[in-house]
Length: 282
Ligand code: MF3
Ligand code: CO
Ligand code: CO
Figure (tube, rainbow, N blue to C red):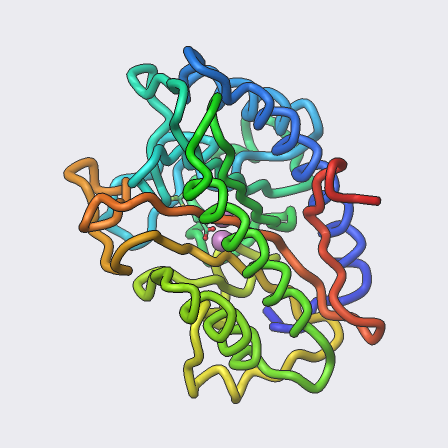
């Protein structure tokens, strides 16, 4: 399994990424007061399957003995940052911010046999399809200006990271640029979670931190490299904690936090963002 994807692989990644961006945009409109994370999740799963894909997070285990992730989307509310479970009890209300993270393996054939095979294969090998990964934080109803600013800064941080995705740069340039933009404004950058290589599996090498890390200098951005950049930014401190459910990760100080993510292919002509939502394309 190479860290450089072939042009045939990239073709399928582009196809999957486009579908995933469209699905994320569609379900993001469901984030209104009174909606449940469960209903949004059910819609996401339906749309993914209809498109010929498989929800990449459902059944995912971080480590062999971790509990499998139960939902199609990661549904994280307010001080929850990532990996929130999409339950019926998670009801959106006016003034909330809601992060939706979604991953898809595409294309897949949905026969029973294929499903059995894929269960036996670990997260680190792809059975057949290609993986894309994207996230947004949306506002529910009305929120204060300060909250909107957090979302804008996090979204901008992602675009700043994407700009660094040119041939000749390294993964370290991405983190440095994001950090130089975010930290002087007084926000916290989460350290315990980072972006990643993606394509044959949800998570591949290299780590793509949202801060400068020396190790990143050994990962050159060459044509065919596919990564997910995903700044996770908080109004308060950057420390996080995991809930008793074994998945939901929140800010330790309960401060508001935001998360935006795209899957990017490095090309000779610069970054190709393959999970753009229709509303982002102009
Ligand atoms: N979407 C996360 C990421 O962006 C991974 C989620 S894994 C899950 O890297 F199991 F929590 F869904
Ligand atoms: Co993600
Ligand atoms: Co990711």
